[in-house]
Structures are given as structure tokens and as C-alpha cells.
Image (tube, rainbow over all chains, first blue to last red; front, side, top):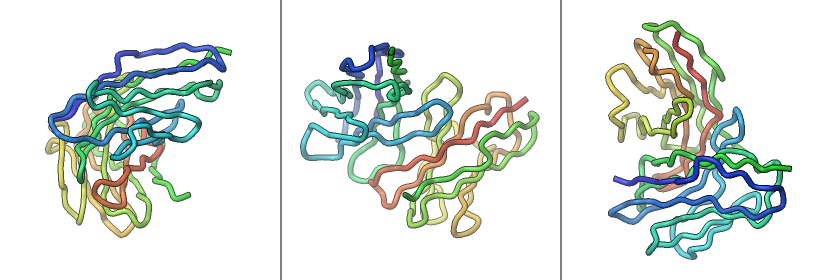
Length: 114
Length: 113
């Protein structure tokens, strides 16, 4: 089975500062990795995904993530955050090669301070 | 841009009552899923559905739950006799092919009193 750990439940950061949201995964098989964002009172929106190929993945809203197989990590980064980035971010994993379910982490609340 | 829709956005029910949560997946998608998120907790997989049958389900998805695709557009989750602990946000998702990205709906907040 796959699992995801997001150690930081909340991350406060000042506007225009860089941010990194950490994600580590555990799996005995190859995986796909995802970051989803949930704005207040809204559903889950896909930010980016890693399926294969280049380990640096770029997503929407200026976010990027790097897949590190040796560290079993998939940290999310943005060089300069905006107030509108305030949301909850979920790292998620699934088995590669035709998956069924996505397993989510517990989420990290990003609070951008003006 | 096509999107997954869910109705209602909020459902309040009494314990022991049956509820049906409705989802309209993206029109050319073939794989359908339900997840739930209890307040303050992580999103949990409930069930996946393909070709008119359940392809995988979690231990949460017991006999009280059922899913159906009654027509070419809707995908429903039924809870036969709701319990207090069923209170959660329920998300529907769909994907075009196995291995493809799952697109999530906005969720239905279910409150069981």
C-alpha cells in the first residue's frame, strides 16, 4: 500500500516570499505523485502531477515540484507567493501503470501574510 | 473547460435516513470515484467504478454504501441508514482512462443530525 506524509500542518509565509511544502511518500511499487489545492469551501484542484520523465514538474499558478526517488520526496515550491495562494495543499500518491485510488496526505494549510 | 458537478452542495439529514449524493462526471470519462473528507481530516478513498461495476473499494465502503450509474450522465452514492460519523464532505471524481488524472467535483457537505 502507498502512504503520504505531510509533516507541516500549517505554513505561514509573507507575501512575495518563497515557500516549500514538504511531502514524503512510501511505496513498494512505482508511483504517480500529485499535488492538489483546496481553496476555502471549494473542491480539489490539481496543481501538478508526476507520472514519469523529468523529475521537475511545473504546474499551474507558478508552482513546481521535484520528484526525488532516493529521498522518496515530492516537495512543492513557489518562488514568490501571493495572498491568493492561501489554501490547503494536499500531496497524493497512486500506483503507477493504471491506478485506481489516490491516497492523500493530511494536508498543509498555507497562510500567506500580507 | 469541462468539470465535474455535484448536487446538492449541502445535505442535512437525520440519523437513520437514506441519502443520495449526485455527481455528473465529465462527459467522455469512463472511470468514476467517490472520496470523503471528515472535517479536519484527510481525503479518503471510498470506491471506484468502471463499466457499471465497482472496481475497488475501501474498508469504509461497507454494506451501508452503494453506487450506481443510473443513466449516461449521473453517478450516485447512496448511504442507506446514515450515522453521525457519516458527516463529511463527499467528493466525486472522474478520469478518462485508467491511469489518467482524476478530476474532482466541488463536493457535497453531508451533515447527519
